[in-house]
Length: 424
Image (cartoon, rainbow, N blue to C red; front, top):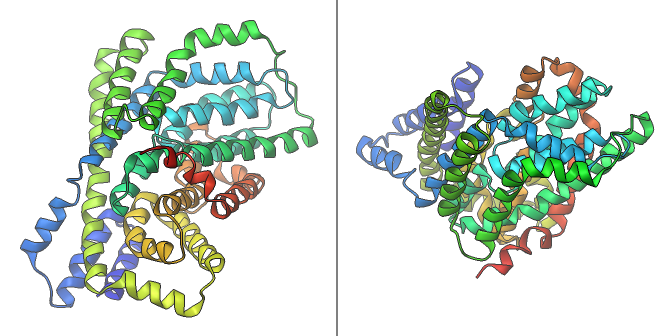
């Protein structure tokens, strides 16, 4: 039935059917063809799938990303990041990466980063004489940070799919996110020196403090959230509730950049995105049911181990497989479908499930910026009106450094597991 499901799913996807719908139809079709269609059982599984308490955090994180973007907080964050990177050659590129790291620590959404903060970053860089292809490519690459740095929506979904602690999964992404930030900055340093791009505004402590006066409520938000998780003051759901209320008060009453009439649109947009994610989770649960019935995770693990016992070779295989899938499908669907299959294999070769989650999410983050799907690549192209082909010309330079950081995350589990080990 699994093979039948995959064939139907691929055919429907090629016909342009939305992935979540295609997955649901393929699952029902495979069960019907296999003579195992029990509608009552499937209905129970379908509606039970999104009932994990941890998933309450997901719409709250989505709401934060939308209201912060609508509230033009991206402008304030980018100005602050720019002041920190002043006095360096190609300084706006560093500000781009740093701003995305901070914004990612608030929104948890790479798409929000690319479409919201990305537009601000590209406009500022082009206005100061940077080539627009490099400006857009830097924005696309730095948007990957939002799915790795906590709070990450996709990391919460991995925690649910893998039955792991959401707190540990979230904080596990912090050091890898910082590593990616350093890697992208190192790449930008090489390109900026080679291209002799302009030195940004003179470095000034007064300017930093001036920008910090406006930005400190935003900068404080991810710090408080992470501290709450690390020291046990907050669960992910409580933390999501806290930052949602905080963001609401800040944008509506603090910065006053969100009007009351905009709130209806923000709530509706949050509901739409949440609904689509929950529908993905429901239809993915049907596919997981079929695979578990046929014992696919065990069969797959035994098959791979019969080919090779080398953890390095197996990790390379998983990474390549996820990279290919990431170019073709939505990352959340991939997590829901592949976690039950890959997790037993990760455990068998001695990879901690938390580390496995970071490997999977980091790999899929690269898929966000690679065609043909490339959600962040597409979002940046549309928002900035820069043709995708123009951005793709210079993307290999960024992809190289992203692959280097991915290899380091694979090779050194300490990067992912140091912070989760502090949580009791």
